[in-house]
Image (cartoon, rainbow, N blue to C red; front, side, top):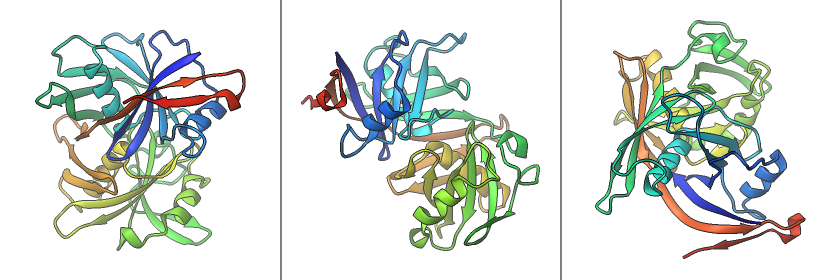
Length: 297
C-alpha cells in the first residue's frame, strides 16, 4: 500500500498531514508514534488526518494525534497547516479565504492570506472563548478563574494560572524563560494529579518591549518550538494577571504569533504562518521493517 503524505510546520511545530476524506485509515497509537519518530519514522510533533465533517456548517474535520499517539482536542499550529493544505490543494472552493474546520474541540473559523502565487502564507484562527472554571479545564485546583494558585511539586511550589483552549493549559511566569529547566518541570506538571487529563505547560516571561516569551511543554509531545493553543492560553493568563491588555506578540522558539483576546466576543485570535515542507509516499509492508518513506522534489 502506498500512502501519500505532506510534511508541514507552523513556526517549527511540525506535522504529518494525510488526506483521509472517507475516514478509511485507522492508526494505532504505536503506528502514530512510529510515523512521528525522528529517527525511525518521518518525524513530527503530531499526525493530522483530513476528513469530511458531519457537522453542519463545517467544511472539513481535523483528526489530530500527538506524537505519543494520544488524541488531542485542538492544535493551533496544526489547524493553520490544515487550512493551508486544504486551500492550496483545492479541497475547498477556489478563491475562498475563510473556512470552518471541525475538531474534537468544536468548529474553528480560519481566515487565510495569500502570497503572490495565490498560496496561503498566513492564517488567523478564531480559537473561541477560553474556559476558566476549574472543572472545565479540568483541574482540581481551586478558583474560578484559577489564577495565581500555588501548585505543590516534588521540587517546590509554583504559582500557576490555568486556562482551557479546548485543551488544558497551565501557565507559569518565570524571570528568565531561557534558563528555565523546562525538560524537568514540564513533565512533572503535565502529569501532576491536579490535572486529571494531564496538561500543557507554558513557561512565560514578559519582555521589556511588551512581547511575551514562552517555552511550551506539550502534553503528549514534550517541548515543541511553538504551540498555538499555548500562545492563546498565555495571552489569556497574562491579561488575567494584568501583564498585558488583551493583545500581545507571543515570542516562541520557532517564531512569533500575534494574539488578541477580543473584549466584545470573548474569543481569542491567533495569526501566524503555515509552511509546506515536502511531499512524499510511504510504502506500508506487512511488517515494520518493510515500511519506507521517499521524498518528492
